Every structure is written in C-alpha cells, then in structure tokens.
Image (cartoon, rainbow, N blue to C red):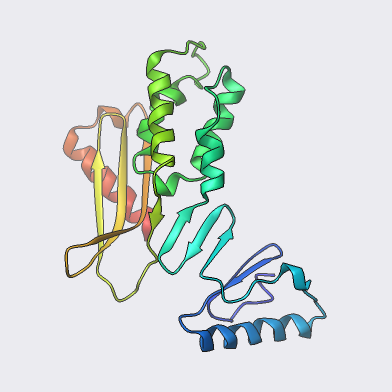
Length: 217
C-alpha cells in the first residue's frame, strides 16, 4: 500500500490502513481524489463502513491525531495504568513492552524504568521491593497525564535539549515560539551501559547531545 500511494502528498499508509490530511477542505478533497483514483487504477475497493471523512481527530496505530498534535490513545494508556503490579519476569516484560510503545511521550522513561530493567538481567534474582513499586507508579502517573506532542513545522525554530544522569541520558526536540511557548515534538531516552556510567559528567552530557542529534536528525 505504501508503494501504491507513493508520490501523493499528505498520505500515510500502514498495511491496509490509509490516513490522509489537509490544511483546508479543498486540499483534503484533492488528496482524497488522488488516493481513490490510485486505488481504482489497480482494482481495489474500500468498504463504505470503513470510511471516515473530514474528521477533526482520528485514532491511528494506538495514537490520536488532530490538528493540535499527537497524543497517546487514552484507552490504550488506561489499560497500562490499570495493570496490576508484575509478579514475575514474564509479566514485567509485558508491562515494559506496553510502556515502551509510548516512550516518545514520556521523557526519561528509560531512567525511570532502570530499577525494573535490572530485574531482567540474567544474573538477577526476582526480588520485588518498594523501589520497583515506586518506579511502576511513576510511569503510570505520567501515562495517565495529558500526553500531547506537537506536529513538526518546517518554518518554526527547532531546539534540541539534552541531559544526563548517572543512569541514563535523554534528549528532547521542540519548537520555541516567539512568545516563549515551548511545544514538544518528541523526547527520547536510553540507559547507560557499564562503561558509559564511568564517564565524567561533562562526557555524559556530550554523549546525550550526540544521542539527541543522531536520534532526531
């Protein structure tokens, strides 16, 4: 589907899901006409009940998309928030996997999950403590808050900020508007390995900047 619709602006396709956007109704109609024409050329049909037109907000791949930006699907994050505490390795892996799906919405997620990831090491014994419970609660609290990322605007100034701690590094790319308003495009984070944790603080900060540039370039 992606190859079939290549060259048509404002269109994204994933498997058999197609989403198209437009700044105005006329632009939306033009794009829709191009998409339907391309599908007709190869004999593809779309079921009428699968169509939605001129929506202000749509759910797509676990996210809600609108003119304001991208936010995590509240129903999906609610499922994570309502999960009981993990009682074994398998359940912990499942919880972390669900959280990682929304890593772009949670700054320093890797660092917050550090105590949990330590339980997944080969040499680690399962010993759930209050520290692990607090880590889960922190992540759930953030996932339960309004999570909105703005759309990237080519003509707006872009800022890359980075930070480092003893356990991990993080970066965030955002737009800073003329009135000083900050609109986050995306955050990212990762844990440091054993060698990197021995770096000096300046080296860790530099590593965070390099990570941010590579992540968002």
